[in-house]
Structure formats: structure tokens, C-alpha cells
Image (cartoon, rainbow, N blue to C red; front, side, top):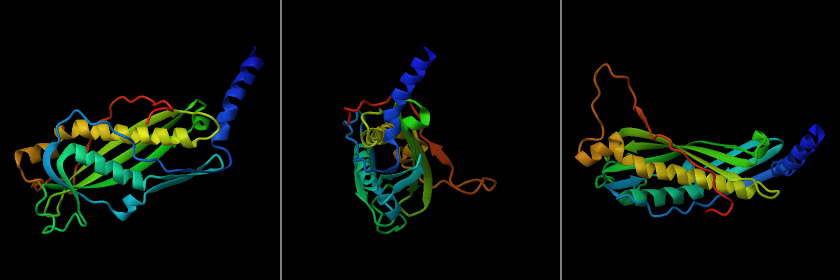
Length: 234
């Protein structure tokens, strides 16, 4: 019986090992389709600034003798465009978040970052799923160019391993993480202190007491439960 169980486990893991075998894996996920959210767009005119690093962001690492390259730049520009248009009444791209005169008509400016992209393959876990975590950060500026706040949020996604290639499930897991992060932002942004200041027409840059620590305090959008997507999901 022990030999049978061992043989069964070996047969089960063998195709999964091929998913991350020798060679390379290039992943270029498209921006996920996001259903129209059941939220009212926040009443603000928002500027959106993309650095060159963000537009060309790639995650590269070597694992189990294979080089993984995940191209996230183009898909995230589209994702952020879609997300911000869902979240706010008016959105426009800006060339410089600190160009006060050019951005005078805006209420606030967002600059997105991808702080971390990480993943787990079936070979890492001994299971049958790919899992992806993406940590995002928004640096937020007042219209006059001064730093106003920082928001961070993390997306989680998973997809079952299928066939002998990791490309499709890795793409699905990445898209699920992107969609999860977008959903969190849409639902939780109206409750953030920045949103409350915007709603009240208050100054975004707050004067700090003399004994306060220098720098901008980071505000985190909290995680919510997520579930793996099937290979047929988009």
C-alpha cells in the first residue's frame, strides 16, 4: 500500500514538475475584465501619473532552473485607467504630478507603483495550484504638487494547474490578483481618510504637530477573503 501511494503521488506530481522545468517562462497577462461595480463614482477630478518604470514593469526571477519573466507594465496601465474611471467622476493623465500650475484644475493626483510581485507554483507547494500576490502602492499628491498621502493594497489570486504548461494558469492567477486588488480599492477607498478630506473640501496636506515624526503615514486598504479562479474564468 505504501508503494502504491508513493507511486500515485509521483504520477500526480510528474506533470506538475514539467510546468516549471528547464528553460524559460514568459508571461504577459492582459488586464482582467472587471464587471461594472455597484458603487457610485467618487465626486473628484483625479490626475493619474505613470512613471516609465511602472509602464515597463517586469518581474524576473529564476526558480527550479527556469527563468520566469512576467511583463506587467502594459496590462497595469490599462487596469489603472479602467479602475480609476470606475472609481472617480473624472480622470485625466498628467505629465508631472508636481507641476502645480498645469494640475490646478484637479482635486488630487495618484501615482501607482507595483511594490512586489510574488508567486507559488505547484512544484513549490506540492499542490495543484498557482498562486500570485501583488502589492500596490499609490503615492498621492495635492494639486500644488505636495505629497499628501500613501495608500497600499494587496491582491491575491490563484488558478489550478492544467496540462503541461504553466503559462495559462500563471496568467489566470495574475489576473485574479489584479482583479482582487481593484475590487478592494473600489469598495474601501470611500472610507479612507483621504476620501473624507476630499468629500469635506479640506486641505489634503495636513499640518503636523511639531513633535510628529517626519514623512507621510502609510494607510493600508485591508485584505478580504479571495478564492481561486477556474481555468475558464477571465
